[in-house]
Structure formats: structure tokens, C-alpha cells
Figure 1 (spheres, rainbow, N blue to C red):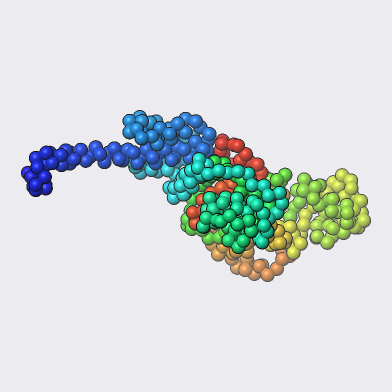
Figure 2: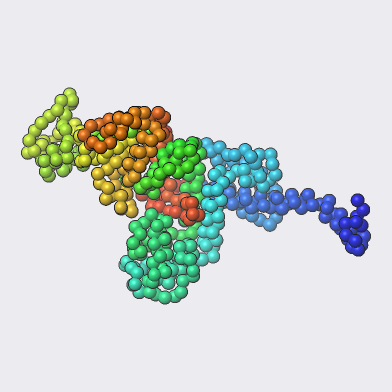
Length: 468
């Protein structure tokens, strides 16, 4: 083809220039591809640097963000290998779709859980921008602030909520706690797992005063933990996020049920582990562990000798023989060594409620019902002795009955009664994972944060997976 046909009237020099552009288009595209790939890889390296406090990853992020194409070319491969190693040592498999392709494909191919990755990276980027550009002074009103109150800290609180995205429009300088601020405080409390009362108190202030950098670090660390915990979940599983006090049931890759749960107290922590639910127990009895008997049950018997009778406990000696005494005798015996075992009969008083979901584990924890339904209304639900109490327990039991219970006829016939215990085996075991995530991006692209109730994530970049 004649160059003259490309554009009549441009002249010979113009024709040669267009020819040059055509010949060099491939290299121009290659350069832009490298720049884009470098930016993608830089975001990944910075996220992992925040999570692990690795200065080398932070250096790679800075070099890849530079305007120098030569620097990007120099550091791309070494940064990509460092990122791959980061995930490899944590036993996280990466998709192979980017291997051998152009640099942009290579960079995106290193991203685990791409949707969650992009949401996290975008939010971390915003937080780091805030850390560099916004002042973040301590807010300390010295007391509770309620809707309708007037206080000099109100404009500062409104500004903070606007910067964090909980207030949709920029606030004015009013010192009155108005309706618009109330709605923003409620949104803020909801996504931090706090009691949604619109009162700005110590816990709400604690989260308002968390710096953007600290928030970015928390998100980054928890994303890494999420990837490690989630890489081998499969299509069907139960997952309990302990700091969120929440259970999720997934089947066929789709969420089936989400429920509030109660977990172990700070001094009787629910362990991080994985197992397989093998049985559902209808109307379980409760064999009281010795430790709980000494710390929880016997002090109540010492105060009231009728406690064992009223709560329907049977007492057995070391040979398994039933032992009977008067209320007064039990009260006296509870003050001594008490060489007996306790078992609570099934029924409305039973601490395990009507349903128990059994999975073998060394910690002897399981999921179960509870007669104390009112406790689910607490925002801080670290209230048990280690086991997980499930709010929507009947819905969970019904799912097992509909999908996995072998003897459905017996199940249906026994549901109305509370006196007889029956173990039901499953046609297939269901994996259950007890994890510990204090931050994540939710389905509405909001950053969720939760209190580190067991202090497991305090300045700890070394991340671990739940143990089987």
C-alpha cells in the first residue's frame, strides 16, 4: 500500500511520521502494558507490605509506582517472584491463567480471590491517601454524646465520619448533634459491630480515633488471613467468624444461612480450628466437664442446694452409679472435693438446648442451641465457655434434616418432644471452620471492622491458618 493513500495532502514528512507510528505501535502498547502492570503489582506489594511489615515489599511498591519505565522493568520480575513466594509459603495456590502471558496478565494472575482483592486494595488506597492528606486529631469529648446534645466535638465527629464514608455529604460546623449525624453514627456503629444506639461513647470513640494507616494495616492483615483460611473451603461448609459473632452456611458455593452466634469469653476462648460435623444430636444431654463443674456449677450449688434438682442434673460416682442425696447434703458436698460427675438431662433447662452439632476435636467444642435466647441481643457476644451457641439453630437443624439426615422419619417424629436424646448420622460430613477475622470488605463494598476480642491481632504480622 502507498503511504500517500493513508491520508491525502499530509506531505512526505507526515507520511513517514505515520509510518513510524505504525511501526512503533507495538512497542508503545508494550510500554503502556508494562506501566499498567507495574501499577497493579505495586498495589499488591503494598498490601502485603502492610500485612507483613516487610520493607522489601514496600520498596518494590515504590519502585513500581515510579515514573521510570526502566525501574518498572527492573523490579517487575523480582517483585512478582516475591509476591508469589509470599503466598507460596502460606500454602496459597494462585491461578495459572497469567503465567506466560503479557506483564499485565502476569500481575493480575498473582491476585488471590480477585473480587475481594480489588475491594480491599481500593479501600486500602483510600485509607493511605487519607493518612497522607487528612489531619486526624484525637477526639475526646469527656462523656457520652447523644442526639440533641451540644458539644464542641460535634463538628470534628461529623468531619471524621464524612472522611470515612459514613456521612454522605460534607458536614457543617454546627455543634448540635442532629439527625444527619445520628444516621452516620448508626452506620459507623453497624460496620464496627457496636451496639447501634447512636450514643458516642468509649467504644465508638475508640474506633473513630483509629488512624487511617492503622485501618489499612488491619484490612491488609485480615485479607491475608482470609485468603489463607478460604483457599480450601470447598463448595459446602460452615464458617464461624469469632470476632464477628457470626456463622455462615454455604452450600454449592451459595450462602444458605447467616446467623448470630455466642462464642467463648476472653478467659475461655473458642479455639481456632477446623473439623467435620458428623452428627446432629436432638435433645442432647450435657456431661459437664470437670473444669466447668468446679467453676460454674458447684458455686451455684453451694448457694442453693436445690440447684441440681431444679436444673435436672443427675450425679454419678466414679463407677457410673447414680448417686442421690438431699438438697442440703448436696449443698454441703459442693463445698468439699465433690468426687462426682454431673450430667444434665435433656429438656427445657438443658444448657445445650434442643440441638447439638457434633464434630470431633481435641478442644471438645461444638455448635449448639441455648435456652438463653436473650443473650443474642448483646453486641459483644463473647459469653460462653468455649462452645458456639447458634441463634438460628432451628433453621440450621432443618437444613441438615432436609439435606443430610439419614433417618428423616425418626427425626420428624421426635421434634415435638424434649425428653429423649437421639443421635442422627449424616450421609456426608460437613466441614466446619472456626476463624478469626477482625476486618473485611462486605458485599456492599463497605469496610467492616470488629474488636480483637482475644487480642490475637495486636501488632502481629505473622499470620496463621486454622488448625485441623
